Amino acid sequence: MNSSEQNIEAGRMRNSRLLADAHRLVVKIGSVLLVEAKSGEIYHQWLAALAEDVSMCRARGQEVILVSSGAVAVGRRHLNLPARTLRLEESQAAAATGQARLAHAYQEALEKHDITTAQILLTLDDTEERRRHLNARETIDTLLALGVVPVINENDTVATEEIRFGDNDRLAARVAQMVGADTLVLLSDVDGLYTADPSEDPEARPVAEVREITSEIEAMAGEERSEDGSGGMITKLIAARIALAAGCRMAIALGRPLHALSAIDSEKSTAATWFLPSASPKTAHKRWIAASLKPSGVIIIDSGAQAALSSGNSLLPAGVANVEGDFKRGDAVLIHGVDGHELGRGLSAYSADDARRILGHKSDEIEAILGYRGREEMIHRDDLALD
Image 1 (spheres, rainbow, N blue to C red):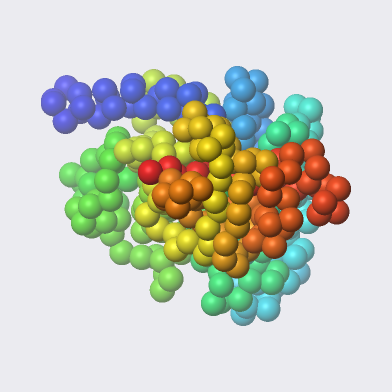
Image 2 (cartoon, one colour):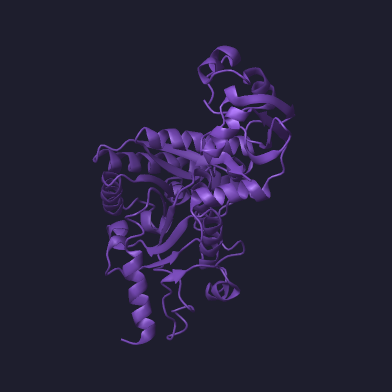
């Protein structure tokens, strides 16, 4: 075994623990793995094996989110649509038909392991527009807390060409970013990134680890498969860039064999490239808050709240002395002490109007004041970046 092969083997042995050590895991399933191309039938045996793997992950305390392709592939055959590139409205009709069948298949496969599923359909706007982003994140967080496995797909029935993700690799990365996942696995018909296209270059070698998306790494992806890059290695590298920026490690892994997730756990696995971030999801999120967001207002806190924040606690309404500006729920705000000194910034769980109404009050008084039960915190500690 030469030195290059030894490095690859050492990397695989180290990385075999990455899946087992995940806390919140997002798994993307490509349609080629799930749906037979000609008949449009779902591979139920493959899905049953995936359900066993998901059950294994949950048994060791992991939260699992599935991002699944396949709705259009299933639906187009049941609608007898022609074997050509579908018009947008035809794709939407196929998605509407196929998504119902796909969701039912996941439900049947997972309920055999006493796992409850929930279907969530997202558009790009749901991850980009701040309030919708928060609503989607809180829904997924609640489902996970209740022991549910969310099954997510792009909302093809309403998405237009201008707002589509274009590929579920990128959708999965956006979901991982949104929910603060620490691990993303793209199950595909390829077994990872190679130094060149192995179908064209016999000298191409698998890449076990990537810590930065450089121009050299991008060159390894080759050419796009279609005009928008959908489905190729390029979209997987775009997903990796999103994941790394969010502090989420990502694997490109061969999904065709049964029990593909279990195979990644094995030290003998030869089917994965891991992209490893330099920061954790929480650290990356706080860096993003500190550096990337334009504040829309100011929340002034008292000395007691300042001491609480310094100890790593959340900001409660009781510690807020004043609110300045006009901001919406989820907007970034500056945090000042009563002396005017800037302490940091964070994402407000309340609009400016609601924040003014509950400032100085205890959290158990919020519902009586606002007429609805909001969060206990004005700003959660995970959404705080202190100076």
